[in-house]
Length: 119
Image 1 (spheres, helix red, strand yellow):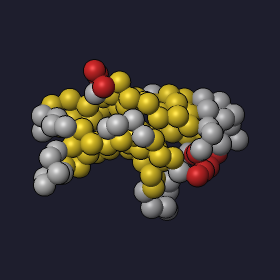
Image 2 (cartoon, helix red, strand yellow):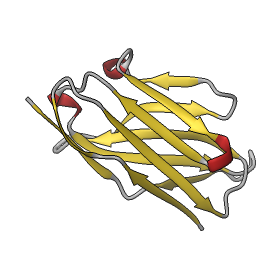
Image 3 (cartoon, helix red, strand yellow):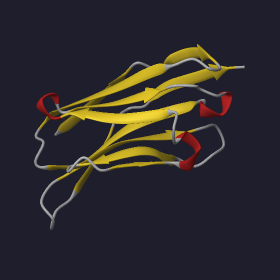
C-alpha cells in the first residue's frame, strides 16, 4: 500500500500564493513520476504539473510561469508552489504518484485538497 497525504490548500485572494505538499509513504518501488492534477466543478480532471524521475517537469499552459513543481527525493515529497493565483485556479487538487517496474506500473492518488481563489 502507498499513501499520499496532501496539505497546504485553502482560501486565498486572487494574486496570492499557496504551496501544496504531498508526502508519499508505504510500499513505494521506483518512483517514475509525481504530479499534481486538478478538477473544478463540472469539469474533467486535468494535469497541472508533473515531475519525472530524472527531474524533467511539464506544466499545463494555463499555469506556466506561475506554478512550480519540485520534489524532495529523500522525503518522497512533491511540492507545488502556486503564485499569482487566479479564480480559475479554484479546484480540488490531487497528488499522483506512478511507481513500479516497466512491466508493472502502478498509479496512486491522494484524497484531494481544496484550493479556492477569491476575486
